Image (cartoon, rainbow, N blue to C red):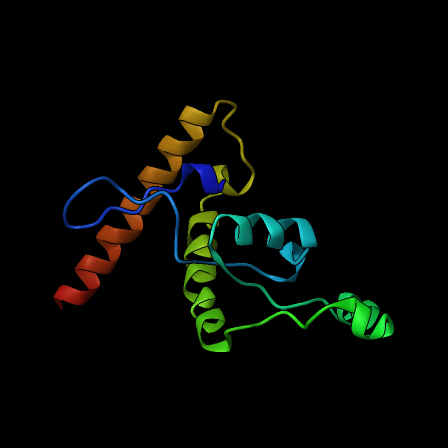
Length: 124
């Protein structure tokens, strides 16, 4: 998924490397963290309790605790709420569309509907 990211700026080519990636505990594996570290991307992913326990059990050989930016992690809630709004549309939630193109078209359509609804709400 990280290969598909394109962050447009005011000028120039879109950036392909975000400053940070936020994820839930399901993405806290060493492999994911190593991949992000290799690309110079900050990982904002809390450590699972069992991973922390295993690291602590190894003592000084277990490595350092992972850093975690709690304020940046709180912003993840905004993205989660958007995903839930997108999934409120049945064809997106069930992945009914068979081809990636038609699924992406559905995402665009649903996002447009959400955007228009928010626009009309803010106009009043």
